[in-house]
Length: 401
Image (cartoon, rainbow, N blue to C red; front, side, top):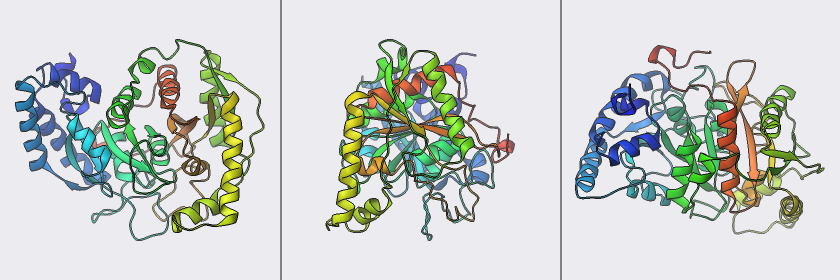
């Protein structure tokens, strides 16, 4: 079976755009297949708070007219799930729609509790595609679940403390937080980014949203000198499950064994960013001398690190996915929110599995504006350690594997 003969709902974003632009696939066919899949699979998954079939079909018809008139769009016909709190008017959503994406619906986010690593719908909580009794993470909960379960190839997310990277890790997909400030966002801690099943799809998304050109990093990630890398399992302050740290380190060591990473000794010790993050989040315009000082010291440590190193590698989360009752006293953002304060780009890449069968991620952080290094490392790991297939028959969604 060729790509053109396959069910459009099973294709990745890059392939859909190629087929739609070439006239081998009609945008309305993609929408119809996607809506059929969502109608059955999302009964259990509950990734979407709203689905927009009429809007999607109208957008597909308009896209078909544009293509017939000679347009060529980088993401033509690609079904897009949209994080509810961003909506269609966010800067990244507008750019994705202008590039040809077709909006399918609004995905779940947390509501009504102080913990943010879950998703709310009026039909019940969003489930993790790997285990129905586990959370998908958050706050981009529904976006990650929809992508991981194969309902859409791309979804919007934003990341203020780990809201892209944590659900990417727990759902076994890719989540990239762009450099803070590359695109306007809801606050100074927040940055946009994609949730995707392939590095090529994530790169295509970033190229549209932040104006990068990352295709070469995907096509040949092993070309060029190794990336100088520093490993840290705790960043100097976090409590991290040893199995999770070991899984992330094993994935990173595979990159080192093939020559992509070159380990550099560096005793990185950051200060716990909790107070500084909370101070800035609660009062963006205010000044807290203690929080400012802690943030400045961490910024100084990171500037020194990236002066001699290309990437920093850590586990994405300190713990595995929790149940729907909440995380208890676990701080799931312990390894991610430091880089919201510092503004560095970071990616979570599938690394392996926890003992309960849910996915885990390895986090890779680069210097400001160096998303290309993240894409190169992610593409290399995807080739070395193929990620688990996220496309399940409906009866397997929510079942442990």
